[in-house]
Image 1 (cartoon, rainbow, N blue to C red):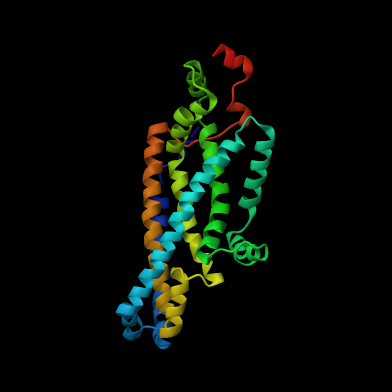
Image 2 (image 1 turned 120 degrees about the vertical axis):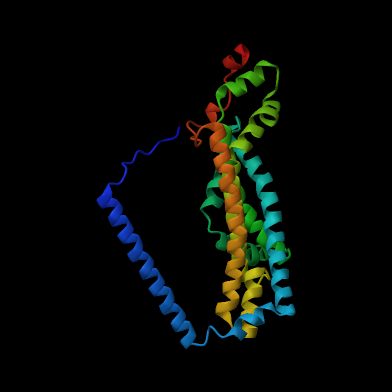
Length: 289
């Protein structure tokens, strides 16, 4: 169900107060920007050389390589997270109680763990257990462990949001349980939850920056090294932040477009009620179907 907010049209006095508040806020913001620019100029942070150094061939190449590494880590972790998240969702709604409990414990544990802690444990803890990988793999494992748990809950919500009649109709035409899931339930659930999935993948992409703490040469780590070499930390890290903003802005716009499209198609947001028992038919219902 979706709720509608009802608001009164602002009267002349309220509109005047809003305009005054907007003007005052704008002036305060401009004043803060001017003060910040003056402070930066006083400390020599607006010198053109500090900015032109960033566009030298070797510097630009290193940033591009760091961006490529970030995108590769994100792409691999996204793929594994989507696949594992789908399997976790199926486990969460399984009719097998032990499977449901084990998968539920996995989801609750990794969803509660900070990504940074998972990266540290993967990089420093797994080698102590005799499990040796490259830093790239350690980062992918940490990102996959967290995001697969979150995506598993997103998939589960999408599956449980479908009308029960969809499953009953699939069983009525002779489909088995897993045929029903694969051909009827899951495709519709994925379409419904696509905006939420894209939003979580945006978060995954931003979390790749946490890998700098183990010295992994993704874009943030490359930016730190360049900043130390050129002695222009503000400018270099500002450029790195701008690159992240542009990438995630594009993905967020894509997610917003999907959300609006899905909202128009399904008539509002999705709310999930009940639990796994609402997904499966009882034996008596199966026989009637």
